[in-house]
Image 1 (tube, rainbow, N blue to C red):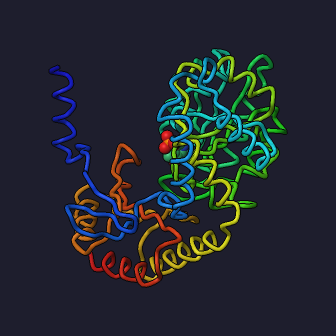
Image 2: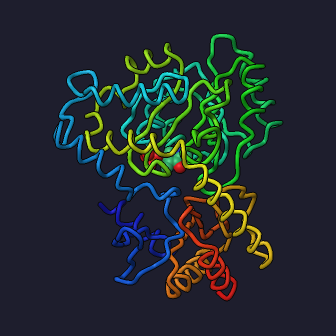
Length: 378
Ligand SMILES: *Cc1c(COP(=O)(O)O)cnc(C)c1O
């Protein structure tokens, strides 16, 4: 207990204690301390999380099948609706789909299933914590390559693919969740093919927003061996799916503990996900709006001299540096009715504290303009 107490004190002393901030939500607004705020922190990019079509499917499946699936997939937790959703995803992606209970659970359990102690995982330096936790949980050796650096990746591939008895998995996100920049997936895929490595692409922040029918950035990349789609962001629901070859799916059904030893997603969730995929493929207008809003915000930030790293997506970090500066600016934003999340180390590297702005299809140009005003005043 002393150890835990001292770890908490460390965080307090550095003003880095994480706390749960209660908020409330109506269909159109975020309420913080009882005040209406414009939400620039949500991952509900397409505004589907409150859509009547998703809600109704959720209710319909609940009424038919109840509130829980009450068992794991391999026992009696595979209902017709689980198989229908996997079929629906298969027909969209042209690959076999396997549903997972969350993106975190998928990443943390698929990588250990795929690799053993003779194998190597080459992961981008800025990969999401769930991917790194998956690497740590595996028996493979983890090697990090410099963020989006193909030359560095190639030199590692040269080194590690020489060992003929080892599998080498390259792990990356497509849209990076904290920096908002985009991985060179095509080139990464070609490198993997040339060196006989395998590619694992996490499409969490691209699903619904990029690529043909909004299916993501990795969907059209034939050199991706496993791609991860998550349902809690633009899809507006919860859960995840891995898309891959038939053999790899069969392998995970047999060897992936995070798939095997857990209760399958409840009917309500399966309902909202299936309804969402029926809608989101046709939402090009909303996608255009998101991309328009994002480039407008980046342009306006550039005018004010703000540093938004290499962001090229709907995730736009404004680097503020020190913790106190980051918190001060986020409080000023809140006082003016804007909610933007303040991201500090250890989530991001030391000295790169930031306000992480996410832009959605529902934001208006006026709202973006006033955000920039308040931000530049602060
Ligand atoms: C959000 C996120 C996850 C986790 O997905 P959940 O379904 O929320 O658990 C995994 N990877 C990346 C890159 C993410 O941004």
